Image 1: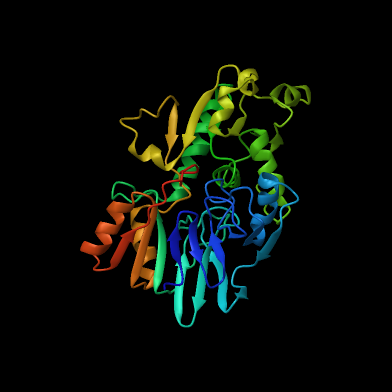
Image 2: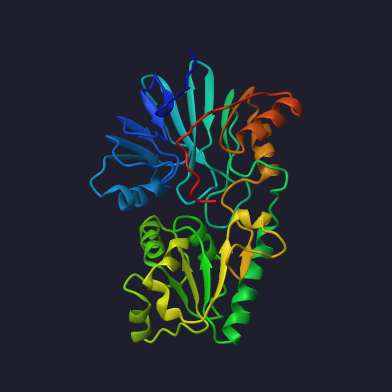
Amino acid sequence: MALVTFTELGFYCAQADLYIDPLRKVNKALVTHAHSDHARPGMQHYLCHTDSENILRLRLGQRISVQTLAYGETITMNGVEVTLFPAGHVPGSAQVRLSYRGEVWVISGDYKTVGDGLTPAFESVRCHHFVTESTFALPIFQWREQQSVYDEINAWWRENAAAGLPSVLLGYSLGKAQRILHHLDRSVGAVVCHGAIAAANLALAQSGFDFGPWEDGTAGLLALQDRGVSLGGSLVVCPPNALRSSWSAPLGDYRLANCSGWMAVSKMGQWGGVDRGFVMSDHADWPQLLEAVQASGAEHVHVTHGFSEVLARYLRESMGLDADVVEQALFERSDA
């Protein structure tokens, strides 16, 4: 029997009686990171990287049972060695290495192999079996050098500020938002964070992360104005659903942009209802996926989470690997 099996509840290591990113309630859940499609409520006990603990408690409740590991730290569960390594996806994200009697598995969770200056960079881990995501597993997805994207964001903000307009930048509240904050040019104007992002910032700050100065919009934008914060010329970072509520009403006329890997396939500047699209993802692009698989040295590759069939077929036909698709019908991509 393989060390890891694929069940209706998720990835399962029977020897350790441990599920990785389970889909429903189980006794022991190792969570690769705190996004909601990987960290679900109701587990009896959670195991995660140290930097994920405060986010897990924020999202799942302060009273959950959590054990943490640092990167490179190993615990043994009924003979199975469990070690976490950086995944480079978002703060606290981890790859899971499971080793038992000479058999080694690595479950990547979500990852990117190019550093972002904020999250500890992805580390390749040698193994026999590699479970990889495939969110952007099409050759069309090849990210540009990221500093040029940060420069474009700041230039766009500077142009809008010169016209006295707020700039609204859409990004998911864990990972994407903090990455944006980390690379903003504060000389342009004030930076305002929606309450969901502010809460994540404060939780991560307890782990030592610093995103530069920002204004907390939890109490609303009118409250910020009452405190003397000028919205004209500011940059407001918020999750996509924030613009469907009254929270954004005080902004008046503003310019809107989206940061997402999906902006790479928007046609001729049509950004899906926004003024500007910036191609930025916390997931590996096509070359990074192939690089990660090759660097793992794995004889067997199991593909999930995205364009799985495309990647598995390429690994078989072009790289000569034993690759299959893990069907996880309940997985939902929420953080591209």
